[in-house]
Image (cartoon, rainbow, N blue to C red; front, side):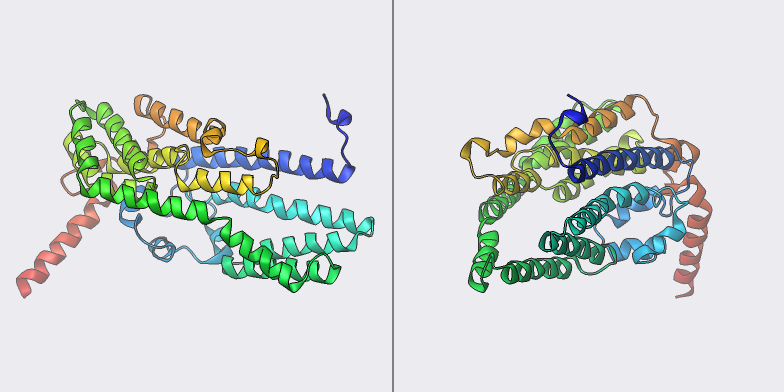
Length: 359
């Protein structure tokens, strides 16, 4: 079947073509910029060895550490390895705006003014979010704009609009309570030594640098499966990963990368994680037939990005194609920093020693 056989309007075909080709361009750009970043061809704005220190900080702390301006000021740093990745993300995020703008023009030509206004309001909400407005404020504008359109068109009343908002809140109750339950269970597991037992068992199979990297990956993966939260998994496994890194001389920047990669991989494929629970809940709210409803477990097979990320992550352990920065600027274990930062670290230690003796 080709595109000409599909019974769809020209506007629908333009919408689909924009999404398809725009997504393809965005993913290709993301792949290229990722390769430029991990191979060290483009120097990052924030050195990789500084990332573990910034894990638990806020976005404001991250911007301050890298002197990254807020809003669209990042465009001035587009030549940096970790900043140029935003280009592909912006393309993917902007596709929806382009599609709705096309739809609004098409509806205006057909004089379907109500639907045209709805499409314009969708564009407005997304543009406000891109301009840096608080996302909750932007979504609130969208909700009330939709309500006003429905009221003025006669499709709903003030009371039915309030009922729709309430139904939206109550529709997420199952996900909310299940997430609370998973979080509570994960804390019980951690407090009673379950995660510590897993980590001890994994350390028995670590014999060298590569097996240590596999162990670190398995460690954070199992922690994520136990806690259903990738941030908590990194925090729980972080201390042990640091010890393993020192013992088997795994570059801390590499350790940080493995913790990040494999915690996110399993967070995206465990059916009791908040991500798949929310995806299933949102999907089920759009269908009326029970036969079309889906479960979080049924989505796991379609999470191809997570499976590809896991495969590439494991491959990078045995074929070192993604450690260009670590080879160009190796880690100095004596001073606990990259070799390029040793001179500055020595100067700092000398200054601190001088201050201590003066006191």
